Image (cartoon, rainbow, N blue to C red; front, side, top):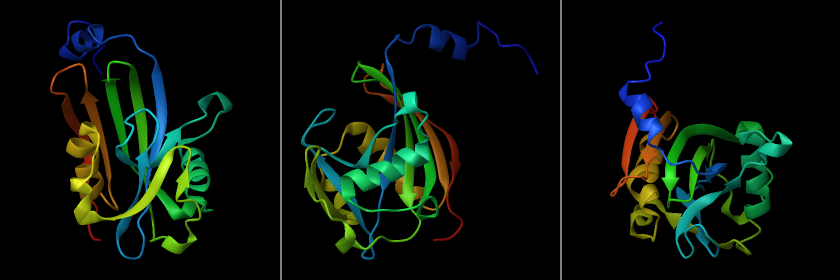
Length: 187
């Protein structure tokens, strides 16, 4: 294995990256029996009035794991009690300099089996309003551009599989690279 070359394109790219706070979060794609996705119309930053899957920041100071965070957010936001076997990690997204304010590492989870939509007990809370959205309507929603162009298409392509993507928001328009892709063999 060759030593890290400080003159390599990767080293040069990192040397010019802005120093910003780093946030770690999860997003959870919960599907119901009608193959609709539970989406949050956000009331708070980031991205107020836009839609995203449920999720939130990992309590990493407490040692919370991504899976623990996903289960906590499902409970807090949707009122559902799920277990580890009910969700699976399906993607990792690294966002450099999102909105020029933070770097993000986002773990994407999906429900392994459809959830019963009638069991979602909280449709409105301080973060916003939850809605069950048919998959063919997701593209019509107000979505953050990174979600529209990168996360949503890859979440659909990789349902039952896995992907890793790097998004560089220091460029306008932002640039992204799919660095790992393993779509599901069957669905």
